[in-house]
Image 1 (cartoon, one colour):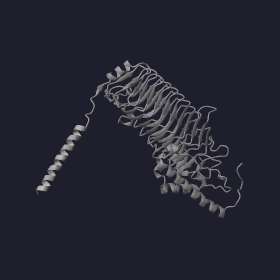
Image 2 (tube, one colour):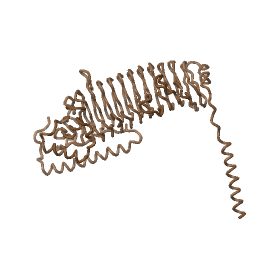
Image 3 (cartoon, one colour):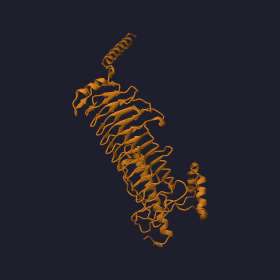
Image 4 (cartoon, one colour):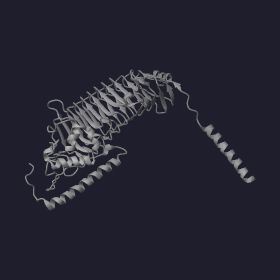
Length: 471
């Protein structure tokens, strides 16, 4: 018995020594420091100099009134203690870099922010901004850059949150490489000639929201699990290129929404698993304006394209509408007859296309004219969506086919539907999108298999040449 007792005693001593050594090795958390220390560093610096802020937690609100670079890369934390705006920039040419900014106020009347910029040519980059009502707020701050920041809003009900990034009357700005979560919007008011690239927005209301902002390019952004991916309102000459809008399924649930917008170009985007892929309301709204939707993947949405009947002068070409519950629908009664669903003989791919391509030129020999009795009923009574994929829907569609007098007019006419889905890049889907890409590939393969089976039936039961033809 003596041996085990000795071993237990020795083990206890060793553990005690290790614990004591670990306790001695742990650094005590740094004592908070007043933000006045940083203010003194700024006051001592010359215009244009880099102020390297020592590691530490600086409490209070900081105002930067001199054109300096505030570099917090050594571990500087600015803590607003839940009061007001944490850092406010009042001079042109200021850079805030590598800082952690946290705990702004929450009083919506004063709209407190993590970083507020009130002068032009600012650079806000590589910061962590968290627990703030507004993240980065630019007011009349043209020629500024907001790059590489991680922004997380306060844990509030969605209706009480502030915007992750907001621009007001701030032209010629670059917003790129930011990761934003749990905010209201990234919103752009009266701001022109912007460039937004490689931003990721999740768990928010509108990923990107434009109001009266023109001449802007949105490229390679990833917007997922929001109420709406991108909403453009009263904004003209906007180009959306290579973005991904995934699983935006709030009350609106649009991947992309347009309201009274002119000369919009939407090209090579992935709009996947939203409630509505694309929503168009009276766009374009001006005489002589148009809209172009080209080479987009619109897949697995409840509705691929939803538009108001007064929508006109849009061109849809080279898009892939894959396995949407409804390919296209109108918001209310009417058709989309004033829009073109082909350009230069190239239409769109529709996974529910029931035609064929006898001459194997890649273009279906019959126009795509979707006529769904159930879809027409849905337009008048959206609550019927409860019965999608149910025997009730199948019975209604069977009735529509059996009694042609009950079938509604087609919502649209694609005169040159693609027989196979076009090759469209999905790189914009971003990290974690491999499952989505595989799902798209699976749907395409299934569609191709169905086309092969249909082709075999045509070879056996239909004449080898077209009757009539396309011009």
